[in-house]
Amino acid sequence: MEIKFYSLVGAFAENKDIAKDIRVTKIIPSLENGEEVTLDFDKVKSATQSFVHALISDVIRKNGIKTLDTIYFKNCNDTIKKIIEIVIEYMQDHS
Amino acid sequence: MKIHLSNSVWIGNIDPFIHSFDTSNDKILEITSHKKWVSVHPVVLCMITGLGLFIRRNQAELNFKKMEATSKHYFERMGLFKILGIDSGIKITSHESAGRFIPLQLITNSQNLDDFIREMIPMLHLNPEQAEPIKYIISELVRNVFEHASSSDGAIVCAQYYKKSNTIRIGVVDTGVGIKYTLERFYHPKDDFHALTLALTPGITGTTTKIGGTEANAGAGLFFIKSLAKMSRDFFMIYSGKAMYKLLKNPKNKQIKLISDPLKDHFSSETNLPFWKGTVVAIDLCLNNILNFNKLLDLIRKVYREGRKQQNKIKYKKPQFI
Image (cartoon, rainbow over all chains, first blue to last red; front, side, top):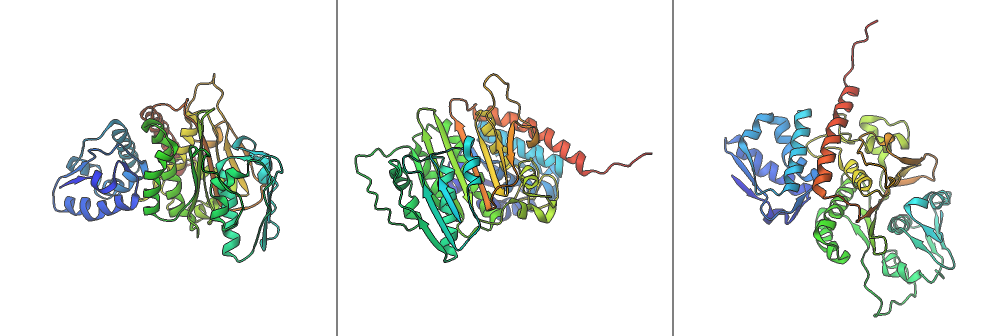
């Protein structure tokens, strides 16, 4: 499954309600079906740490860090890459 | 209750303004102001709005004494009288500059916030790099209100860009349950100031005792925001209950190091202020000093990791060998 964020959140990804919805209705079911998930941040210029945390932290917490082998982050600019890295490191410390 | 808008109130000198706030009678709110000139941080407008709305909601009396100061037009332009339903009688002439400000707004839900963030940057006429931390701050602070404050009026937001100092000043206020109440369930802070320091520590959130938070809250938002102020060598202030924590300006010749423990920062505090039911947050960002947002994220990542390690050490009990 490929999820394109720009059409869902615009250029600034900050809405945690949308992040949760994407996690619950798209990411988790796809992973449960054994699919790989691609999170495409094309045209998204920035995101908050809270948005990324709401998007993926629960997936890592519940499935373990190995779940990252099946999640791909596509078209991320440097800011978004760094925020994703912060959240993922954080989850590895606490999962 | 009585509150007086004095001649000049900014984060640096906000303490006497707050001390003068009289909370003794919540059946009436009397607002008075300096007769000649009133010049205030946007957070002050948010606080007055919060108090006014609180009074209206409780069907108490709001007595806003007519402003005489020549700067009274600013308060009209920022929407203070409109939001409180007061006819100020002040006319704004059409040739007056539109300015670079965000008038008082009540943000009550996610959609409001999305719209607000989309519309606010053009109002401030900032370039995308300057806008990045501002969007970040507003989003995180307002979502804190949604998730933790249980505030009837949502978040009260206001901002102003000051060209001369190239600084943006932002206020976000709520009249909800306050930080101590939010943290009480899992952290049992001993007083309001302890609650503030917990809230500023990365990894601590009111939704769990687990360092690192839950699927919805990482406990990092306020730490990120305080770090932004520190990197811009400017003020950050948080006031809830009877306590205030104020991050002071970092001297220009001193190298900036982000620290996870707020008590190790250069700060001042108050622990016996008039009780504010809810939370007041103010930040100044000098845009001359803002680092590249990505560099800031690198620094935050480093300190965030170290801070979490320290927190985890505190959480794990060790055997006591005697």
